[in-house]
Amino acid sequence: MAGVGARIALIGGKSVVAAVSLLVLGATYYGWSTISNAEASVSHADVIDKTATPKTPGQDMNILLVGMDSRTDAHGLPLAKNLLDSLHAGPDDGEIETDTLIVVHVPGDGTAASAFSIPRDSYVSIAGENVKSKINSAFGYGYHEAEADLKKQGVTDQQKLTLGAMDGGRQKTIKTVEQLTGVGIDHYAEVNLFGFAQISDAIGGVPVCLLHDTSDDLSGANFKAGPQTVQGLTALQFVRQRHGLINELDREHRQQAFLASLAHQMLSTGVLTNPAKLNDIIKAVTNSVVVDSGWQLLEFAGEMQGLTGGSITFNTMPVANVDGRLSNGDNVVLVSPNDVQNWVKALFSKVGKQPETSTTGPTTTTAPNANASTLVDVSNASSQSGLAGRVSELLVGQGYGKGDVLTANAKRATSLVEYSAADKASAQKVATALGDLPIAVSSTVSPGHVLVLLGNAYHGPGSSASQGLAGGAQMKLAPSTPTTTATPDRPQIDASGVTCIP
Image 1 (cartoon, rainbow, N blue to C red):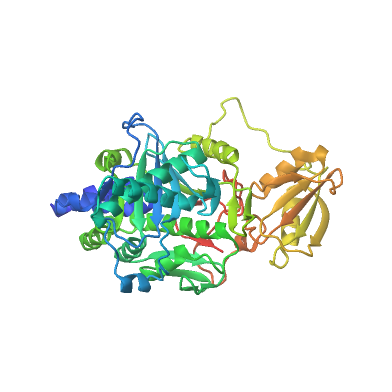
Image 2 (cartoon, helix red, strand yellow):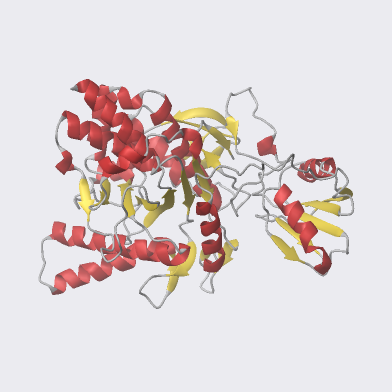
């Protein structure tokens, strides 16, 4: 029976790897149901709109993964104060917020999965409310509305109130994500603070790699540059760190690198065929993971057996300004729903698709001097020494004319390509060569020139992030070639190994 349990656990793990952080639940769920027949201990929530036509096997589906900054377990019971203190959870100010939002698209053939992060401070319209706020507050709106409705109905039991209110928060979050992204959510999975720490501990830790030392007193994070393994509390600190990073998008990129490595560990190191580790994982998820009640995980597992780490990719959705500020002084991430929806549609349309090959003869290549008419000026507005020179040399190597290499007086967070009104096409080519940087017309750029402004968040071609890692660590670096992501300073990551990140 143990052999059958391990085999089913392996299939389940592969299926839920597509749902990234839920892959551990997948392994646990099938291992558990086979070995101990204790399925009822995993919490389910009735949060998916039943008016929509249910997805059948072979159809594409979208999954919303949520990390909760929650002080309760999956059953609505409060976590002990000493446990919260050990997790650096911070004071309970009465707010109920999501800490992580990731949308995963799985094509019907089950051979790939594409995930993208939604920055928690994205300033959006909250579904069903006449208000704009940070997207992580959607949960709180739904929570308090559902709680008030239940009290009006006479419900007084605190656990029932909490469970019902949590479902209200989940539903409001789902609808807000759907409204922002333009895609329907078919399934939902959620893990809380404590569960995240326990799950990472149960699998024996997750390898990660940093290019720079970082620290954050609020989360307790204190990491040195180089490859290392995080688990339990340090894993939670790694993905929750906000301070000491360049900006909010660094946090999303860090979570993606962690989850990609987690998926790689599950698929390649025998975790799913180790009964002792499976039992540890089972214990870890009992009080921390919630999935929607309509998700037929075993059926899903059967579709996903062809999935590999390299076919699981992570991106960050496009943003208009990562350093936005409201009139009340609050910092937010400004987004354009129209841009987000167009980008998501393009990203998901490519998932699992093989590049088309031509049968009409050899393909043509760009002439070496095709870019020579464009002079590219590069200005270093970051704190990376020599960055403008490296990027300029790279572009000259691609046939562009060498323009001025400058050092900006003022630093900036993000990067931008500026152009004169007649040179948009040339600017777009340069932006694509550097990882799909955003572009903008400027009256100060001379005709025939393109100006590349490099900010602190730049990690594309020519950056220190693409030059290698001291000490000879055998790790991947975040890709420096253009990808489908519209936030090129945080390039696409896959789950084929461990990616070194800033």
